[in-house]
Image (cartoon, rainbow, N blue to C red; front, side, top):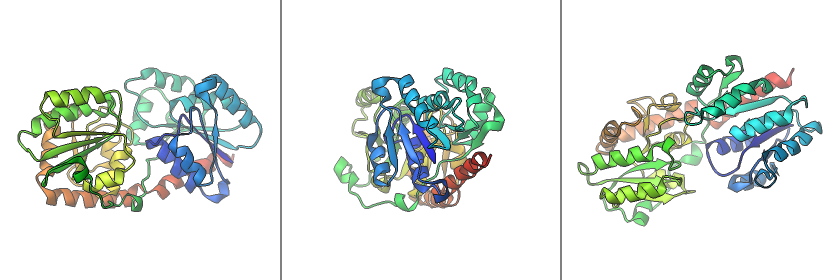
Length: 361
């Protein structure tokens, strides 16, 4: 029986991948269980509704070491044959807990930890505790090798997306937002954090909106930069063009009315927001970082721009917002690419092949 361990179960990229993996796993592996360090979150309920056992380790209350000790007792019981961990704290807790139990550990690397180099140092110092680490993009794998992680343990397995589930659904989002007729909409999905570059997007909007008054920017997500972004949008006279929605659960509905997705990240792993846009038939304008160029074929399924370059970002957004035919053609090509290269089934099969390799030993 396979046990998945994750730091938390709020709805995010890693959490969605774990959900699809746990619910799509072939029956020969048995019914998996999912343990979380901090709290259940909405995705925990989704897992339970799908018949997956969810184990809460209450790390927020008892502390990380106590949670790891509880996990160790579970692994020593002989119930589980393999542990697959997601996100940094779960990666480390899983390695501590599994030491000496005989249960092989597979960890996952979801992003290049550009702003937190100590994390890759801890990963490197404890890498002997794992049999493999999955990387969501080849760029993440190469970055990890450059920072001293053992290349023979790193396996690239991209995220998957359920294209039928991401079909655009009818919505009146533009009316709800009070957007005028003829508004052209660039959608940002993600945390309002320096990594995702919402401040770069604000500067691009400051360049674009005087040239293109019907351009509007909708940001779905929350985070530490929310207050600053809101204040600066008002200061720049962009309050009527910059719409901060907070965290949203209706991403397909937002994509249904968007003309494009924009993701000006400073660093990335394999951004689910871009995958969701591709599955919905929307082109993406994204910074050329991390796994973005592994998703977007520049000029065919979307546009790539240099990171931290508001001028290039504004021009790429303008190009697609002003040419609906071009945007539609790129969006259709993006959906075909998502169906062919990034299906959930392909992601699950690649993980199963990895499990087979170590369970057969």
